[in-house]
Image (tube, rainbow, N blue to C red):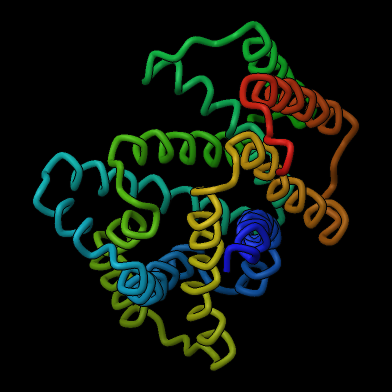
Length: 301
């Protein structure tokens, strides 16, 4: 076994990198799934996602043995309150994202997730008292210029991008305060939203005579495992993959979303929008350089 130990260690390391890569790729191609449900109201879709995600997460929490963490959180009013707040933020994020996909705004959604890391940097300053380096200030300023260019070129503020970026950045900040494991935290967040989801679906069923096809119901039920799988992969990878690598991999998801919206769904993008996106991409390059210079990737990574 001693001779096999280095091989086993290397295999586990490679597996963690593949798990991280798979998580971000799945997040990047999610528009393909949500587009199949374009005929279903976004609120209905998110309610089904809550219900079926909870079923999936109950199994996941049981498998990883995180029920004690949930019980401790339920006995702590502060953590429970933060969990409810986090649940509202992530539900808003998913609702806006699903609406954007269903209404042909995947490119705008990708912009939101591109600027999210930069907004995280700003929240670190405002909430956690972190200090920005010169490069980080340049990155944030360049991203702001990019957003201004997109706004001017389109004639309106991209509320989709700003909503997605701000809700997810706030969600990350709240999650940092709750200090719950990823799977247990998401399970509890989903559970507190269950009564609202069930109530809304009952109201919809009583107020409309529409009968969904078996195919639609099947797609809705897939929302739980499909959206939970990348989170499980991410949680497993985050324990071992260096932060700098995770920071670079996170751009895979919005990049794929951008390609899906632009190439596959042929959403119109003007020159001004491309210039704005280019500014944001340059800002992310500066931020990535800053991160790599502070936390170098191990030579065997």
